Image (cartoon, rainbow, N blue to C red; front, side, top):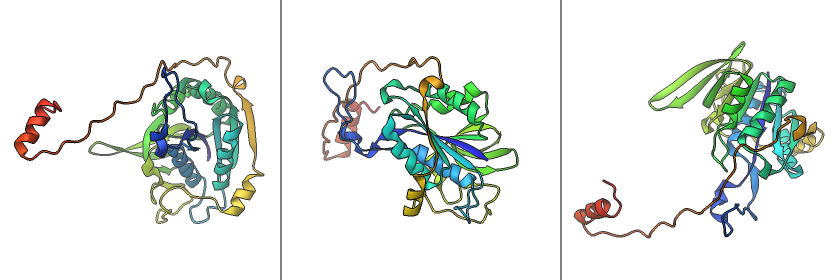
Length: 275
């Protein structure tokens, strides 16, 4: 199986409280924040690696995992890390972070998918910076491929994958014919969430994503990493989404201690407007 995994670099969401909005609100100042791969995209990469191996012998790749990102030269650090964990090839589409939106990325990915011809595109359910949850659905529509969203488990069959999605009140299982697009949720990296045809159903992975050992990090420097111009993928790079302004949320008022239940009810009704 050949799998394409798009990765996005984001500012560390654990430090979101350090984001600043300059006067006028025309932009967001993330200076000083550490960059890292979008967590849901890391989960997609882990799922792709599990689907292209026998879990008992993970160093022997049984398929091909290709990672791609859109960004400037320094995003190659993230791609090299992905190669170190087991991806076979990497592609960087040269672009600026402020010159991208979901539509443009989806249209560029469509061209790339048509060239690479993967059996499956695995993508994080959303990026933690914008939380827009757009690219996967747009890509599936542009390709005319079936899609399963918010995947919690994936198992490979002959010409399809079986995807379980957690929904209110239970689990929905979908039989998705390949080629397809699947977006993953955080439960995809549980020990028994993803199985290729080669992995014994009794095998259990470690919980979470894998980390690269030093020899793998050194070997990743020799793995192929290609650079593609955005203009080589799309003829129209105009953005379809424009942010008008940003503003910080209102500060929360300090809590109030109450002495009686009746006082609490009165404040909930008249101040909090809870009912």
